[in-house]
View (cartoon, rainbow, N blue to C red):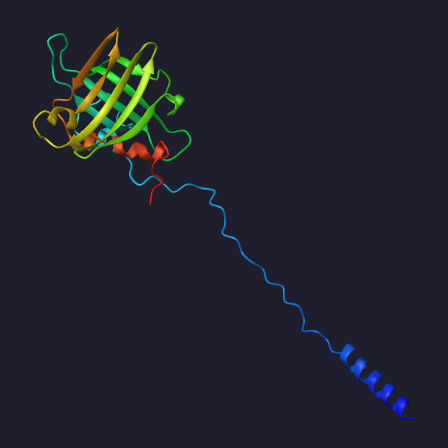
Length: 202
């Protein structure tokens, strides 16, 4: 009788344990940050040619990335060096280098605007005494560098640290054509950092 009672109590406790229900499960949805599919807009756009007084080879609707009148040399009169373009932060954006007397473009690169930026190399040139930007391109066995650099004026390095103009190598000879008349509103080479993937904007 006593054994039966113990078995009865054990069975009751086992049934009680088995009937205890666990708390309901809670589904937790972890949100992931949305992948950014659009790029931030450019931090700054160069002005349209019609908005500034600096002479250039850019049309009134085109933007002036860079333009200056060069210093006349013995074998060359004053020329205009211009980098024109359409820079709106769109896939169709383009830049084009133009050189020649005002109203008489002698050299254009690239020949077609729709080549975008693939024909150029671009970098920021920074040192302890200067900061500048260089746009480079080559054609056949010649190469050209459009430079805007400003820095210290210590003896022996002032010219190198402060150069705006075009230089390069053509027909087996190095050349350097500095800007003469110059205006800051026509020097916007720094904005190209965005288009060459070096600055994603704010």
